[in-house]
Amino acid sequence: MGAEGSAPVVVPRNFRLLEELERGEKGIGDGTVSYGMDDSDDIYMRSWTGTIIGPPNTVHEGRIYQLKLFCDTDYPDKPPAVRFQTRINMTCVDQETGMVEPALFPMLGNWQREHTMQDILISLKKEMSAPQNRRLYQPHDCNEDQRVEQKGLRYRAVISTKRRNFVNLPALRAPGVHSRRRALASGMVTG
Image 1: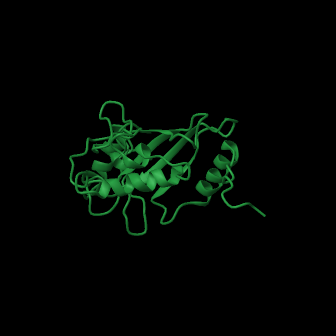
Image 2: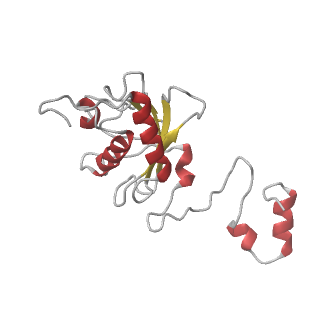
């Protein structure tokens, strides 16, 4: 069928990205890493969003990290540009821009055509557990309230100060109707 020494079949960019999209939609492993297209109308399939839930026993545990992956026209021959949208402190991430530095992240620095966006996200999650990153101070981010528990990945309730929906505040659990009425009248609690 094929002569020895013949060149391997090169899958065209769009077919490769369609395969990755299908894989991303099915979900990856334990659900702590996911990705998908930003805009389903983007016929060039350039802009992608990835999510990593921080690994256990690290400062990243339970944090939800959002990333942007940009696959230019030379993908998969060249790696995508990867940028954390969520603020993070890691040795391979530029603190100002959130860009993952290829020179400091081996997966991007030693890119091979066989690597995928899934591989990148899994490697970044492993990098979070590396000794140089597992205990680094992490900046406060607006998604701090979106932490999840690792066991069963149950979501915790979010208290939003912007909408003034305060639920289960100690003052509201105090005996007496008057404290609840005062809270309702002041607009701190809805219904």
